[in-house]
Each structure stands twice: as C-alpha cells, then as structure tokens.
Image (cartoon, rainbow, N blue to C red):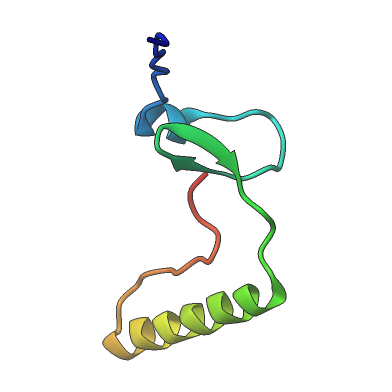
Length: 73
C-alpha cells in the first residue's frame, strides 16, 4: 500500500492577506493559490456592461454607493 500524504491548503483569511509583491492575481481553488490568466477583451466588455448597469441602478435608486470592477485581492 502506498502511503498517502495530505497537504493542508491555505485558509480564506490567508488568501485575503497574501501579497507576493507582484501584480499577479490569484484565485483560491481547493486551498491552493492558482494564478489567474489575464481577462480576454470579451470578458472586459462584459465586466464594463455589468458595471454600467449597476451604476445606472444605483443612480436610479438615489443611493450614494460606488461600484468598481476591480475589487479584492
């Protein structure tokens, strides 16, 4: 029988606090940091559309909120 090793992943709190000093962006997948690929042009257009929709609704409701596409780690 082959011995199995269990590797403890990082917690969400560790993920949020992580800063490797680069501009690289990571996502947390099953306790492991995985470098994210840069967004495609289509992805950027979709994100812009969603932000515009949210901004329109925020203004319509008269809320004093801000909506940012880039947030988080």
